[in-house]
Image (cartoon, rainbow, N blue to C red; front, side, top):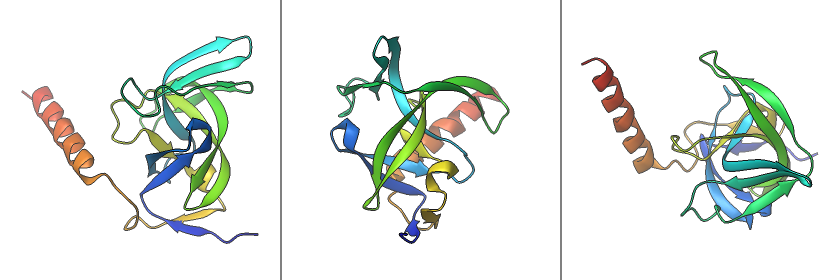
Length: 155
């Protein structure tokens, strides 16, 4: 058995099924389930057709049909419930290839298009929040957007 690998709060993750593209993922030990930004989903005879990210993104042109999928109800930390598709696909994180389960979500308003939760991390990784590859400028922009939004609500 391979030992646990130390990772940070943001990691670069390769997606072999998406042409090997590398995406920044937020590591969230508070979330049970991992999720990835899916901009288009459609049930077809062969399975679930998925297009990831948005036009202009490197991964957007990649379209995958997942023959095996299901739907699950996800509860947010705020108690909101949402029905989402769930798929499995391989990822490579810190040179370790694993099969990960993802729910498909609109993460267009998030800094990171991928969120890795506990179910993917369990038994394989240890998280040190001082490590990783955060997108510092993107995080600062997102924080300013949120602060402006809060300020507008209180006017």
